Length: 256
Image 1 (cartoon, rainbow, N blue to C red):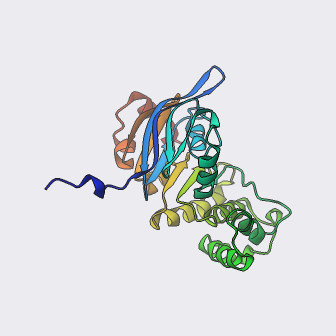
Image 2 (cartoon, helix red, strand yellow):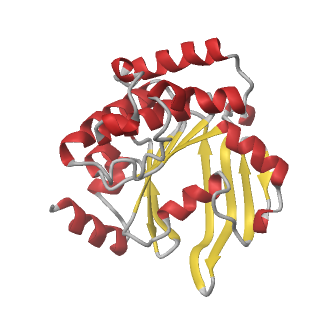
């Protein structure tokens, strides 16, 4: 029986021939990429390969100069000329950065409720109820009334995760969320992300945590010098990489 094309989920992210320059530096070179709803995509590669720039283009934190980019049926145009679409995308795409970017003068609960109240217009009691549920979900419900300076790095990053989830995003982006953490704190953040993956959240994750990538990814993308050099299921890419660049990168990072 021939499969019905309409039965396949439409991509939540679609890039075609996406190009990004920083001056004379060609950071992303003709990127073609589709991400479907519920998919967990992990992006790996050496520092400076374009990984973070790639995901920052998805929510408009970086402008691009050529190509096509659609996010949840909203089209972003080159050179940032898409303010209405960008505003919509930023309410539907959550992002967790390397640094926690919490407001130091606000309590944990106020950090989490701020955007839903100000951007989505939620009532404070509704936003507070949601925030408490999310803080419990990431394992720090007991920290709700503390301030960021009173928390460990791992706890702060989980607050940042709860804050992103409070906007009920259709897509979550993670830009090396554990790279600023002490080794003993990395696990607690990865555990919270594992739970999100199990719940079916669409996620694009830039990380150097190869064991985590192997465990949670539906697909792993290897970027080298701004190009997608190889992609595939984690067992294929990690165990039998086809491209010489992928092989040398993995040989270097997996021996540590």
